[in-house]
Image 1 (cartoon, rainbow, N blue to C red):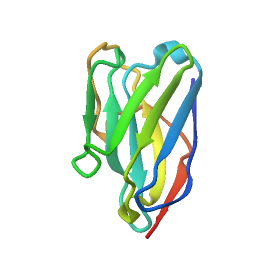
Image 2: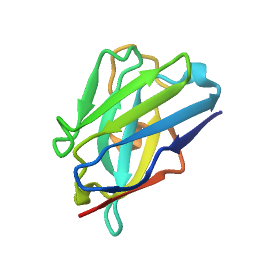
Image 3: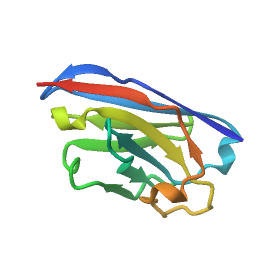
Image 4: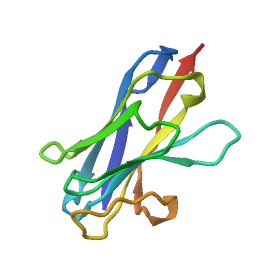
Length: 127
């Protein structure tokens, strides 16, 4: 089994930055692609960013492209989401997810294809 724990959320003013971390523990050798999703109040959970096992492939939602950067450090079993130029509409609970299907290059954007989920971290952007 794999456990994912997010951290780094908080309250920030519009235009500010935050870096989210997602630390994996347990059977981390079974983790391949990873991603970030978010869920705002009253809305469905939506895709934010994804990264392949190799780290060489990334994919972003149009709403965050150019502002957010996903990266991973497999030595630390951690994936990051650097968020810059934050907007009030970025306010949400942010979740990380991990996929256990072996692939070096695959990125996963569909919520239903992930096998493991963290509990989430709140990000609030004030105007």
